Image 1 (cartoon, rainbow, N blue to C red):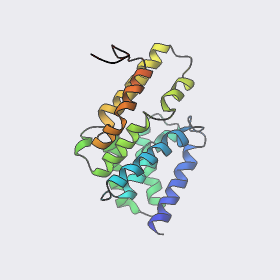
Image 2 (tube, rainbow, N blue to C red):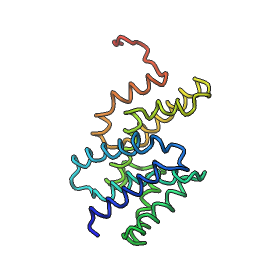
Image 3 (tube, rainbow, N blue to C red):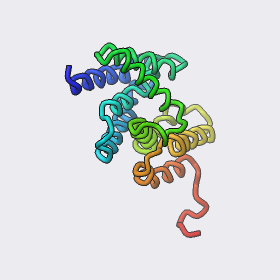
Length: 198
């Protein structure tokens, strides 16, 4: 199996899992999260031709795969399911063991600026994806019975985690800074002056 065939097989399986029950977000997660992460990651890979595309794409497609099972401990489930998918499609147990260790770094959101370039790309793409498209709006739709202030607070938390912990590449931070500010405003964090100035 060629590398392209391998990646296509993993992507196809990820697509099936993200778009089918029991995944609670099956109607939108692939299209409005994973594919946006993929697009941003591909653009970042264009800026970093020395990065390993296979590693980045596997992180993009599998970083949330544990959520598709409906199990409460999604981090542990992601490691188990990602390892299974990688081994079943032919990369072997040693590669899957190393990959699971990389996923743990991504999940921990600690020391990401010092991590491998591939992790920084996947993490930055994931964080940026929360600031573009309907990701935050869909949270409102899915939780519409919650108090507005709680929904705003949770979206602000998601935005800050994305900005402060996930988006580590300088070029991604530059490109998404205005989106970060707009996202904060849409989550109720308004600037002191709306027309600008000091």
